[in-house]
Image 1 (cartoon, rainbow, N blue to C red):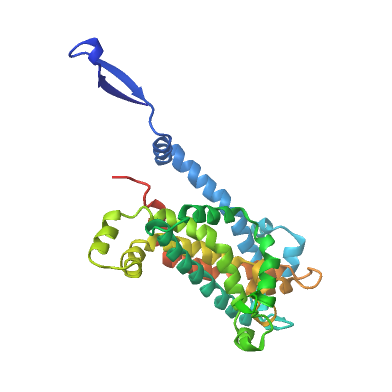
Image 2: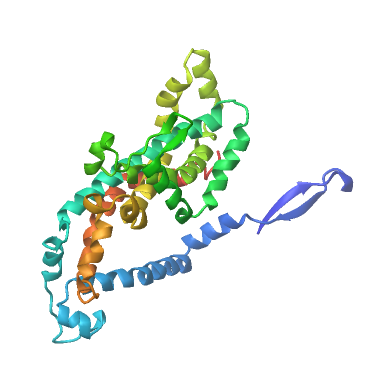
Amino acid sequence: MTAVTVPSGAAGAGAAATAVIAEPRSRRISSWLRSSPGKVTVWALVFLWTIPTFGLLVTSFRPENKIKSTGWWTFFKPGDYQLTIKNYTDVLNAKTSNGDMGKYFLNSIKIVIPGTLLPILIAALAAYAFSWMRFKGRDWLFIVVVGLLVVPLQMALIPLLRLFTTGVHIGSVTVFPAIAGSSSFDFLKSNPVQAWIAHACFAMPLAIFLLKNFISSLPSELIEAARVDGAGHLRIFWKIIIPLSVPALASLAIFQFLWVWNDYLVGYVFAGGNNAPLTVRLVDLAGSRGEDWQRLTAAAFLTMVVPLAVFAALQRFFVRGLVTGAVKG
């Protein structure tokens, strides 16, 4: 609680009344987190949160017979210190009905890069339009976009599949061609374009909503000055909006990258066969009856390498994107 002295004119000149103003809750929480009990609590939660991950790491280096007969914590018992890299070699050398695992690792790379960049670029353009362009029905259209956030992904699987297989036609005019199984799109046999489009569609509502909030908070003086100098919308977008929005774009890129990299359902439905991502083929490592599930512990850590590298590379932008706008001068 903070005491503030406020002059009271009704009580006469020179009189003062003390009013007690409640300190903002966020400031009280921040102060508590900086105190010793707060730091101890945070470190305790971090420690508890990392125990399952540490157990998974230990399990990935244990022999198969130990994994299936004892818990990972027995590794610390005297005489039970047995480590092996066989689980990792089995994963790296594993063969499935459609090839080795390295192939599906490359498939994941082919899916995740366009699946991350495409929706962010389109969402940034849409967010700029919603923020700084004036057109009829803009607010209602944005409400529709926000409303799409509550639509479950599973409800759109069949409509998207029909879109790819039959296309969209209005009379004799083809609005969207049927790309699945069409001889005119032979390049799709080696490129998971359907997965790119699906990930872009599913990511668009949230990406537009988040970027619109950030872009609309940029100083209007910069936009007006650019317009006075004769800059058009496209020039303003590339020269002003994009450089100022790097923290927000990087933060969104991290979330989208992690979502696409760890996705199973979209990759299974829209990028099956030779274009399947790593997550789809990891299921084969457990065997037909789940008898080889010890491989999954090693495979889990191998799939974590790329997301960790991406987060480490974009961490400084991620932190800036989270704190931008949190403090007002």
